[in-house]
Image (cartoon, rainbow, N blue to C red; front, top):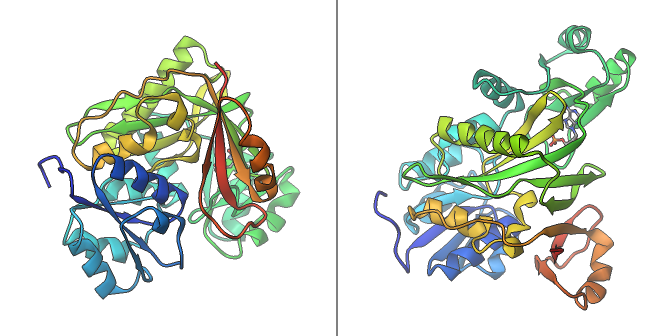
Length: 355
Ligand code: AMP
């Protein structure tokens, strides 16, 4: 695919959660059709996309039919099995490309990659067994955090060490999965940059947002973030460096710790990101449209922030507050159409315009 996609073209999305849903809404606003590929039944994105394939990621025939039905494929999460991507890529381009997935699917690969780019990351060491764990603890010390190399999200697959004596307990929490021990970063606050790069190499970043987590899950994102002018510039430069190194096409989330010795990269997500939801009501072009524009080969849009916003995630029983939030002034509700409320489940979010 070299020419920009035109109205009526089809975009395939791997994953049918809320991110896929909001991507498909943005795509349809630009005149595109969306086809969702999702193993689970009744995905949130299935309510807004034209077409859904319900099949596992190892169903070769379903993957081939899906790939043949679309002009480009993108994804809403990074843990797509490599074999599925191999099948799709023979038929249709995948954007963002495979390198971004290779790097971000594994925390050890990701940290090594970022460090080699000259960016600051937390001190880290590879942990595969008790011997390497004890070695890692002797190098990095405590407090520290042991994280599984793959499939961790929303604080899952993590164990904290407050002293070196916690080593064995933390290792047991990994259930034998390869892990990385990370030194605990003494940050003042956390910010993230939602960065975008087009197929012709243009780069644009949304204003950094300040993130607050609760129980390991994002609770709020506030813009503007508390950052000095130089920290703000640095956040953008770090993000642009990663985008260019990966020859990236699409939107990338870059999570940063703010410390007195500079910004430390926590992790990157090769997709639209929960901490970028504020852009839906803070910018003319939000992260979802920006991503669709990039993967469709369009120029990036104007993501300048026109308002101050606080995004609050609505998780589990927070849904009980929806009738009250629906009456608030300057509050935009975004609900994901999930029938079952479960503790810890992201059900929607609200963007409050604060200035
Ligand atoms: P992660 O899944 O890596 O994004 O981690 C989830 C949250 O745990 C982060 O947003 C931080 O609040 C905290 N965290 C993760 N890694 C570190 C670290 N090395 N030092 C301090 N806090 C961390």
